[in-house]
Structure formats: C-alpha cells, structure tokens
Length: 306
Image 1: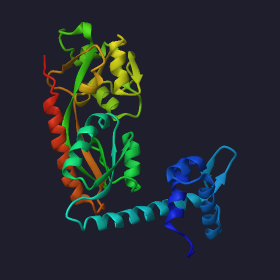
Image 2: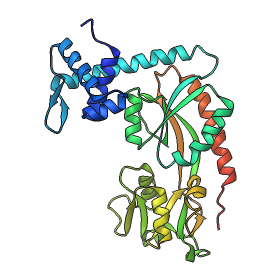
Image 3: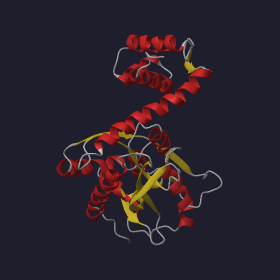
Image 4: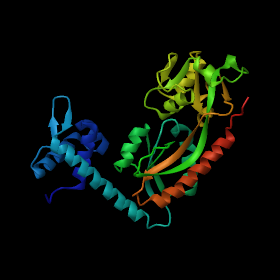
C-alpha cells in the first residue's frame, strides 16, 4: 500500500462524484487516458475493483463505496492541514472557496469581490454557485471553505453566522401600478410565478403565501429570478423576488415593484462553515465584510412601501 497517492485519491473522488471518465478528467484538468491509468494503478495497488464499468455508466462497487467515505475524510483532513498553515498568517490569504445560492450570487458577488480586492488583495476567491443541498454536501466533504445561504441550515457540524435580513418584494405588470398591495389571501387567488423545485426561495415564498399542504393550482415555474420577472412583464402572472435582485432583474422589464405591508416576508442570509475548519476565526472576519457590503447595497436600493 506504499504507492497510494493523494493525486490518485483526488482522481478517484472526481470519478466517484461524476460517474463518468470524461467529466472526471475535465474536473481534474487532465486527459481522460491519464485519469484512467491512475485509477487502474490505484485498483492494482489495492488488489480490488473500485468501479463497475458498464457500457454507459460507471458506478462504485461495494468496496468502492466504503473506500470513497475514507478518501473523502482523508482529503478533507489534508485540506484542513493546508488551512491550518494559512491561519498562522496575520490575515486571510490564499485560496478561499465560497459557495453561494443562485438567488444571492448575481446581486451580492460583484460588489463583494470589488470590496475584497480593495481590503484583502491577497485572497484568491473561487466561487461555486448552486442550490443549498449541493453546497451543504460540498462543504461537508471539504470541497468548500464556506457558503452563503438562507438560514437556518441546522447542521450540527456547521457554524452559522447571520449576515443580514432581506425583504421579498412584490412584482406585478406595469399596468397594475398604483393598485393596493394584495393581502396574503388575495395573493392566493393570483397566478403566482415561482422558482422551480429545489430552490429554497421557492419554499420561502410558498410559506409566506400559506401554500403549505398542496401545490397551488395557479402557479408556473421558472428557472431563475430573471425568467420570473420577464414572465410577469409578458402578463403571465405575479411573483416575489428578493429586494437585492430588483436593480438587475427589473432594468429591462416593464413591471411594478412594491414592498409588502407588515408582516412583510423576509429571509435571513448567512454564512456557514465546518466547526472543525481552522479558518473559522478568519471566516468570522470575512462575514463582517459581507455584512458591510450588503448594507451598502440595501441602502442604495431600498424599496419603499406604498
């Protein structure tokens, strides 16, 4: 077993995650033959097959599944050793792998990256934008240092730091400008446009409208907030979007934007990271930078009640 290498472990993990030699090779930035050779050498060293190789699908063997769990822990531990070395510096430097949900990323990231270039030029930011369940998985596996999501996540192994509260605003066709803001009961009678399944913002919007038991009869799904706003512009219904999204998503749409009256719908945006991450003290400082950036954005783009 003396020939096992971290490189082989990383290639194995990529193949286990993707189930495809080509995609795993792309993920590892090597050629497919080179990755195949490393996996074969790993199996030869272990003396056991790690994958079942079908015509169209690659899947882990029973031994491979157990091996994958151990490899994940090893690679996470190695990553934390690297992080430990970085904590010996006076401030956060080097690579920082951040996950962020799609309903925050396009609106917060440009301002945040600009602020970080000014205040922390030594940070090399790597961003991963995807849905919350995927971010939690990648954070658990050590492939991310931190993630910006809607709280609470309530994972015992994670530390959570609230960053800011964000309001939801009501988006309707421009022709309805000036009409009273609908109550929750009135909202139920409208055709409500929502993000597709899997987005936490969808669940939050449904909870506000008290659609908790069955799927609303008059709803349509969109893949992004931009799609929802354009659907409203086309007269297909109404929607809710986070206040931070308003400047970008409504600039090319003829829609009316208005804040709800109290109790208005909100969500808490925060950062999460593994409690065992040696970067935790630096991540708490990083959270303060995000709070300031978000406060700046909210001050500039505040939507008044009508």
